[in-house]
Image (cartoon, rainbow, N blue to C red):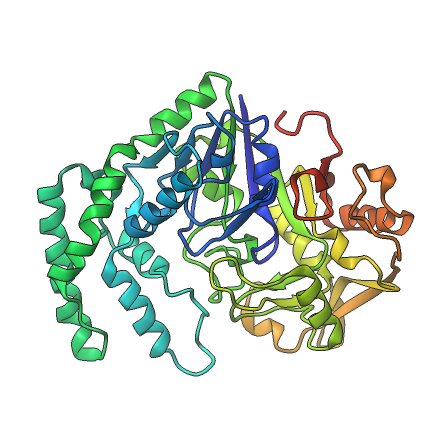
Amino acid sequence: MSVNVLVGIQWGDEGKGKIIDVLTSGAEMVVRFQGGNNAGHTVENGDEKHVLHLVPSGILRPGVPCVIGNGVVVDPIELKKEMELLRDRGVDISSIQVSSRCHLIMPWHKLLDAFNESTAAKGKKIGTTLRGIGPSYTHKIARTGIRGGEILNKEAFKQRFMEQGEAYNKLYVPAGATALDLEAAWKDIEPALDFVKPYIQDTVVTINEAAQAGKKVLLEGAQGMFLDIDHGTYPFVTSSNTTTGGACTGTGLSPRSVTRVWGVIKAYTTRVGEGPFPTELFDDMGEHLRTKGGEFGATTGRPRRCGWFDAVACRYSCMVNGVDYLAVTKLDVLDGLDTVKMCVGYKINGEIVRNFPAEACSFAELEPVYEDLPGWKESTENARSFDELPVNAQKYLERMAKEVNAKIGIISVGPKRDQTFALISDCLG
């Protein structure tokens, strides 16, 4: 088998869409395994820029089956919009498969998301994208969710839709939530259900068949390790497992199937929304990274919080995910700096520790311990191999790899396809 998993090693926005697009040049199936349309993967193909939210990034490679796995929560209306936009731009969408087991985001989920965030106590807001992701996963765990396969029987689906919508109005409207006009909501969603219906499949079967046939399967995650519901900076996390383990539960593949794990990592660190961020910069350097790196959310447009590379956090992340190779993005953003800092430890109550804390409250008194590394004045944008990088950029990457206990397999020095190069001959093994 050749099953590769690609995950984000930080707080998301590491550039997974770009790396997935590069890896899919050799892939024979690409599978998205968790999250929803709160993710935004940006892929530049020639002069065209595509921002993908639900459709796997492999869609820009003709003939490659693109699967939305059972671990994803799908908003049918938003999926229809995304697929139609791709089709209208000349992209073949016939290879898309939507899992019959994926849970669907319904109109009340988005209203619940807004209600929960608006009523959260001061300092307790998560910074959700308000797209209904959390409430949809909540109903999944509560065993009251609606799944993709139910689209195949519209009459039964409508009955469930009305029953659950009425339950939402009864339970939450008296508490101050926005009321849902069920007939109008059904009128809005019905065309999306009809559109998505032909793409519904039992993807657990199709994915396993591809893997067992020896095809190169690429499993694509959204967000990043530190937004994982179990291993992230809880409670400031997403509602799914963003780690390698989630790739198995979110596709139906056995853990034994996974042959290689790719961890996508920025040369510095960013985060969107609330929650701990040990190396966050509030000075001119933070603004420099944000401006030069174009650090604004692909989905929300929100400015990202920026900081130096955190080796402590990334070492923990690589351990949990079992990362074999790193794909380092946005190295070019560090071009021109005299000094580049790297966090190699945390000082807590006067003691230096090198492990990532489990509790969010532990970060309140945390102070990052930095090492100053020499920067490089030369541009990296035209480098197409490791040897073509400035010497100090090479040393920075080597130190990064050593600190996180993983090898570097791909380096990106800009947004274009040809600005990403591999250090190994066969990325998918």
